[in-house]
Length: 114
Image 1 (tube, rainbow, N blue to C red):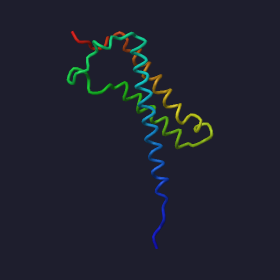
Image 2: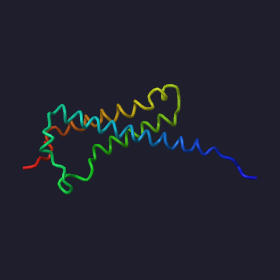
Image 3: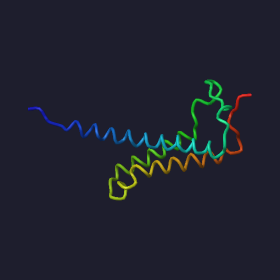
Image 4: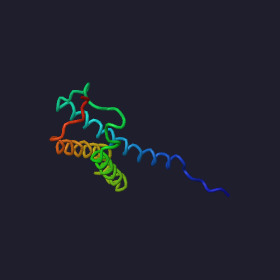
């Protein structure tokens, strides 16, 4: 006799975890765009060519991992309070962390084309 499992519940859980990571990533991207707009960065002179910019931003990765961990923790606890902050908590944390990291780097200017 074959055992029956609800495959859709596993797919739904996987999509929930993926959504948590995606919301955190989008929050970091939006925070970075807001930072560039607030600083009136000249986007036409920003360096973008491979080999001239770092492969990754350590501050952004830390913000993404921390925000994703907060989201996963909220999902795993699954209380009435955590359900309220499931989507907004990681996003606000990621945006705040990225803004704080950008503020700390304010002394350094973005790489610009000469």
